[in-house]
Image (cartoon, rainbow, N blue to C red; front, side):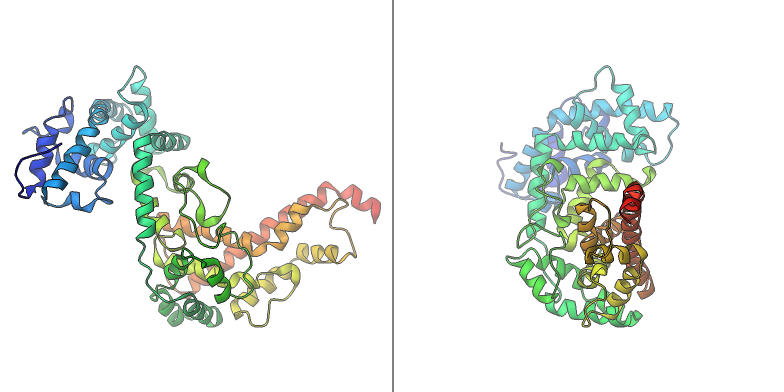
Length: 437
């Protein structure tokens, strides 16, 4: 589909206007001269139709003939959905007024929301007012489950799924693998775990160790390199193979529970739970944010948070409360954390039971024993979830004390959860225990 016979570059605005003029039924998204509104370009065309984040050449002010042709093709290929978007917009405007919602500019809020509704439902039907009201209530603070439904509908569109999968693959393989090698990163992390000093933390945070450490796991043999850098690590449930696989887009395509291979859909669902409704953007925007996050080291977009997780990986081998004391070569902070958990009454009870001097329960609970043995794995899972929440909200630890308190809090949370499980098992089987005592 040729745009023009000339071989000279063309203004992008001219190319957009010419293509837009060939799409009927989009007047509410158009300016007085018939071209797309500035906000239509900013909120719909660039991020959702053209996806300039993955096709930056199509976002340049001057376009080469081939790029102009591709831009035109993408816009016209989405003509039906753009007409549906234009048809949804008046419904959203009316429901906004009816619900007395005043937060945000109406076009900023409703343009991407109209595109999502067009993706999910096509042209508005008889139930359009209810669907528009539901989408607005979810966006502004009601019916959180509606956001999950809209996410599922958005990802059910084959074209959206194909574009997002290609973008995820491109981002994943374009990650800048800069920073110290795993062994050097572990040395920096270990130094901080010994002194917990602000100066050491600043040097560590500025080193890029967290992202570099995470990206190293994607190389062939990444698991082996990690085990070599952190002796005694074992399987912490980070990934299935010897390198981190590209996470799937959809939750039903997940191959297991591994931490770094969770689907984009699952991560966005977590974001919907964590963000207050008035701080959420459109579902399409949340998915785009998560794609960028997934591509970073350890799946955490803010480098400081990736470094916090890398610290957890280095501390993990020493967190073995069922075995008693941590190895002597473990960092001081790790030994302190393990000693605190190892003194817990439920841990001492479990250790006696496993030594054979008293039963843990009359019928040993294999799952409970497994969780106790895998304390480090449980800890890392909770730490990643906490850091992902920080990443979504833009929160950062301000100094070494914040990092220490963060890690200590996650260890304590892991311990309390396991203690509760042991207590429930004992209470449920107390009559049997009394009978054999």
